Amino acid sequence: MLEGYSQRKAAWEILLKVSSGMYSDLALEKVLLNYKFTSLDIAFITELSFGCIRYRKLLDHWIDHTSKFNHKKQPPKLRWLLHIGLYQILKMDKIPDSACISTTVEIAKKSELNKLSGVVNAILRNVTRKLEINNIPKVPINQAERISLKESLPLWLVYEMINWFGITETENIAKAYNKKPKIDFRVNTLKTTMKECLEIFQKNNIDVEPINKLENGLFLKSKPRSIRKLPGYLEGKWLIQDRSSQWVAPLLKPKKGDKILDACAAPGTKTTHLAQLIKDDGYILAIDRSDKRLKLLKENLERLDIKSVKALKIDATKIIDINPEFINYFDKILIDAPCSGLGTLARNPDARWKITKESIDQLIIIQEKLLENIVPLLNKNGLLVYSTCTICPRENNLLIEKFLRKNNKLELVFEKQILPNKDDSGDGFYAALVSYKK
Ligand SMILES: C[S@@+](CC[C@H](N)C(=O)[O-])C[C@H]1O[C@@H](n2cnc3c(N)ncnc32)[C@H](O)[C@@H]1O
Image (cartoon, rainbow, N blue to C red; front, side, top):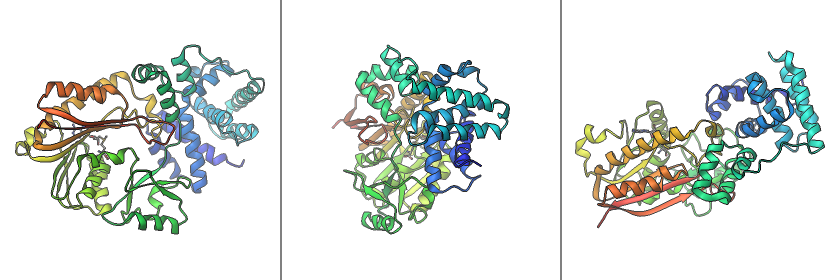
């Protein structure tokens, strides 16, 4: 068997699962269960499969440039296999083209694409030949089309982004969407200290470093590996949390004894942060409408050994009817709303192909409903944070502006939008801190 065959085959299997609707991280997890790979192999498979998913548009464009048949006319299994070969040729400089081609052809030969292995060989060789003579696909003159193709983003999204932020910022964000995201941790100070956590990682030869300006933040410098196998995971000494998400809970200035509502809580990344900030001494009601996600929240509470949180399945838009005793009850409220996730496209490679303008419109209806129905639960001296992991202004600042125009007893205390960029800003995030006017 050719060297690297199984790794590339596993990457192809991930693409097949994602094309049938599975999330990329779940597909990766499922496929890896069938193999025994080293952490280096896993890093390679992740880069290859996630890269193919991100660059789908560009890879299709190359198929159209080199093959008799348009990518839409290729049998889907062949199209995804061609992506495996093409991505290596176009984006993985260290792998010789001959190895990219031979392993891809070998996968075709040993699968139901056997009869098409000649086609795979011909198309990939044609690509390398065209690259040698600089016969590359034409760069569109229109700027939006150019960014859409180069950074492999849906054209509608690029037009929206240009509308929101202008060309230069759109290019920066689009590039950041295609960067490998960092793996960030938040140290659970209820169980350990930053110093002890650093020592544990060091003892196990895992290179981590504190994140600038974040009291409890660390990031992984070593190659990514199975999170559950990292030292301290099972003991709940840390959890995974992106750096920009780590500044959301502190905005509420949580303190011992606070009564806090986390209205869209699961899987509890921010709930556990809130608990940490009140030293696990107070009352946090963490609600979510998804059973499956609440289960993850409860697992996190157990692993991190947190006692101050009560987790319940409740539709937050209805809580005011179900529990009228909560009107004016909470000192602090977090609404970490369901959103389009346009700040996290680097982390979720398939998301860019699933989000639509219409799905954003639907989300905005839910976001407005959540705010309208949750605000009456805040006491008159309380603080409320509305946050999202998107960069779409209609889900963020414009939504808050509209809400405050309708609710003139409330005011904006603070607002922050982080855009994904090349300087390791982390995911894109938005948060607004709101209180009653004094
Ligand atoms: C962005 S996620 C929350 C992430 C979470 N705060 C964290 O930091 O781990 C949004 C959550 O809102 C939940 N959700 C959506 N609509 C809801 C509703 N009407 N009531 C309660 N939860 C809802 C979803 O199930 C999802 O778990």
